[in-house]
Structure formats: C-alpha cells, structure tokens
Image (cartoon, rainbow, N blue to C red; front, side):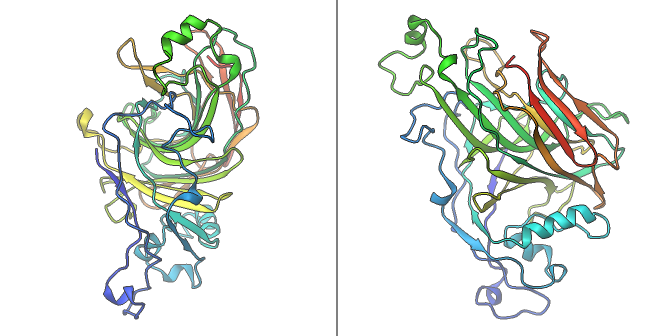
Length: 401
C-alpha cells in the first residue's frame, strides 16, 4: 500500500506568477512539501510510549504547530472554478447542485470559510478497524441502496472521555472509541456478498483512567518494569487523534491531535490520482476540517495489495462508532479493545453520500441498516445507535465490553 500526502501546487508557470491563462484560475497557496513518513516499526495505538508534558505521545502535535498556509474563502462564482482549481486549494470535490443539493450546500459552507491547510504525517499503527461481519464492534448506520457509492460525508464533535465509571471493576486495559465514516465493508441486501475492504476516516479517543490501573503491583511491574521508561500502562493517560485506513491494511494515524469538543467535518471518496471522483481511479481520498481549530488536511491511500487483490466495490456507505482492535501480544491476530466511555446523545450529523453518477443519498432516500454494538463474549449492550432520518444518528455509551 502506498501512502500519499496531497499538497497544493501551482498549475503551470503562468499560474505560479498569477498571470491569467485562458480558461483557468490561479491555484491556491502552495503548501510546504512534507514527505509522508511511517516508522520502521508500527506504533501501538493504545500503548503510547513515553508521554510529553502535555500527557500525549510524542508523535501527536497540535495543528497550530504544523506548517501550513491560510486559504481564504472563494471570491468568485463557485461554479466558475474547475475541480483542479478547487483541489489545489485543499477543498473536497464540488457536488453537482442539481444532483446533490444537500451536499452542495454543505460544500458551500466549507469554501466560504477561511482555513489553514496543513500536511498530515502518516504514522503506521499496529491496529485495525474491522468490517461489519458482526455488530460486536460496530454501532451506527450503513446505507444499503442498490447502487455504487463513491463518497461519504459526515460531521461530529469529538467527545470528552468520561472517567472510569466502575461499572465493570475487572477492567484493567486501555479503552478506545473510534468515530468514522467510510465506504464498503457492509453486507448489501441486494446481493453480491460482503465487500472485503473498507475505506474509512475517523478520530480515535484512547485512555487509561486511574481507576482502570491494576491494583496488583507485581502485575504492573511485570508489564512495566522500572528499566523500561517507555511503558506507561500503569500511568493514567487520555489522547485523541485522526486516522485513515483502507482495510484490511492496518491504519495510519495522521499525527494531529484532536481536542475534546472540536467539531469535525470529514469526507471520504474514491478517485483518480488528481483527486477527481472516479470509482475505478485506484485511490482513496480523505479530507478533514477541524472547524473549531480552523485547519484542514487532505491525504490518500492506495489499495491494500499486501492482502491480495482488493478492488473497490461501493455497495455500502457507513457512519459508525467502533471499538477497534490492536495487535495481540500473546496470540495471533487482533484483540478488540474495551469501548471508551464517550457519553450519551453523541451524534454523527450531515450524513450524505454520492453515487458513481453524482447523485446525493442519505437515510431519507436509501434503505439502511442500523447497528447496536453488543459484545459477543458478555452479551452486554455496549453502544446504542438511534437513526433519525434523513441525516442524523444518536449514540449512547452503555458498557466497556
């Protein structure tokens, strides 16, 4: 799999010096060229290593500490810009106002607001977000129209991690909650089976509260011997971050910290190397706007060929809260994390998807499947999802595992 960071570039010499070229607009400000990076050894998403004075892993930084450029709002008729012009400014694809009016209205909100564009750094994580073969890990909604979905859009507010509630006193493991939007991975009721891949972008909240730390000192010493300064499993910590994934590959953190209370806008689409929506284009594109902090980022992935040939299907679009998996230390495969306590009445809103012909879809236009997360091992209800068509899902945390 190839990891690609999208950067703004001038479209031709005449544009670089802002001299008009017939039929073109000048490109947006050019971002500093920052190469995508991935450590030689994957990082555990729940064992952060040494923590800084801010209580976060060293690989997480605030967006205001990242290089970037300020993109002013569009000044001309939005329809007068080519898609290439818009991509150079860091915007997601422009919807057709006739085929997808709701999507176009949300897009207009995006391009009418100044934003700082930053370059994300890909951090390879030793964890995974799975498919919906079981509601043991998923809670949310899956659009199941008899068509090919090409993009998904949604917004959510980053929850505050609630401290350990004591509801399950045996828990002694970090908790994790993922909020994401994506394409594929579901089981369409119209046949064709379950697609083997999932293209997804989201935010993770990871934590180990003081009440979760084991009460057995010898256990702590075994897991975190004094000579290992990088082990913090016996020290409380909480942190949040953005990530992207083309399952079944493991996912990439984007190195940017997401604060509790931040309003996140996100879009995922399948496109070509130039970012144009194209379900045969071979690239998964990801765009995120942290409205609260005033920055945006764009990046992409190519298919997970390490696991065989995985072509994009587009049979479903998803809006999900998940408890992800982390590589198992004493077994093969992945262990499913306990679900972090994200609170009640949290929402994914503005749900919108487009098909391969550009038409807009949501829960008001398409059939959908709603998932409640129920633990296979305990039978506990973990997360309750309530769909409110056409475009909102309410989530309420119930249990860790």
